[in-house]
Length: 291
Ligand SMILES: Nc1ncnc2c1ncn2[C@@H]1O[C@H](COP(=O)(O)OP(=O)(O)OP(=O)(O)O)[C@@H](O)[C@H]1O
Ligand SMILES: [Mg+2]
Image 1 (cartoon, rainbow, N blue to C red):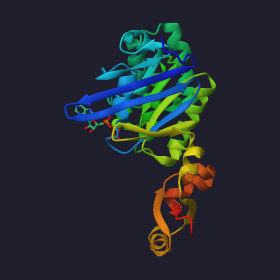
Image 2: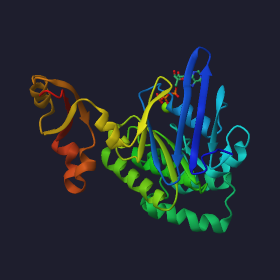
Image 3: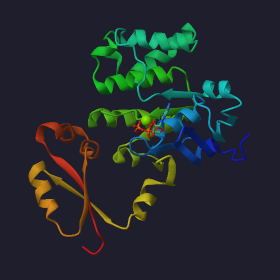
Image 4: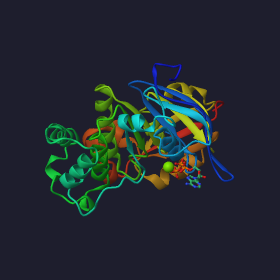
């Protein structure tokens, strides 16, 4: 049993090597119950490997992990009973409908008829996927596919939800919907461990761990992480992307511009939906302090 009884996910010196590559390098972290924890890092940082280690799908080279008080290496079955894992490429059956995909996973998880009778309509309602129940998964939009994958994962009634880049390639409005769903689940007592490469999504987490080349380089609340930045961060909105870039490039003291796709999420509603049509663009501009 872990010494930190309050943490629902804990890793101590967790390490995984693949030949010469150390995909996860002495990772230490503790996630408390009801937290939304985000693991953020670029391609190849070690996010998926970390999730797979925490879910007991991969053995560590060294170190230990606990989920909901169970040692992942020694008690993998107890861990698997308590978690939901939505893989980066979740296995949906494109030739099956939404209903059929859900029934397949309900069978896989051994849900009784009354259980699925209670849970499936609730999930369809929560995700607003009811009208698409008879649509083939292959014909769903990217955001809908992710919602279906989430529903299939939730059929397991997990206490801890592990999501590997769940909104990768999904449009901003669907991403916002997806996060609304996650907050709803947290309200109901779930702990969410999510990986993302989107910084605006990192801001939605209670705490964020920044991962680089297998190492957790810092871990804190999004606002505390921002305060650590020596630069000043500004947001700039513009209607003409090319022109805005030209103007910004000429600014003295400009350190970096980051084209954010999160405008829809900040604005919400009709204006948010106008993002694609109006071509309005939100930049995050980082200035050096002396400007
Ligand atoms: N099964 C494997 N065999 C060999 N190397 C692997 C294996 N799985 C991962 N790696 C290597 O480990 C490192 C971390 O990979 P991982 O998939 O965990 O990164 P990631 O942060 O999830 O990246 P991405 O954002 O692209 O999904 C990479 O260098 C990758 O090539
Ligand atoms: Mg990955």
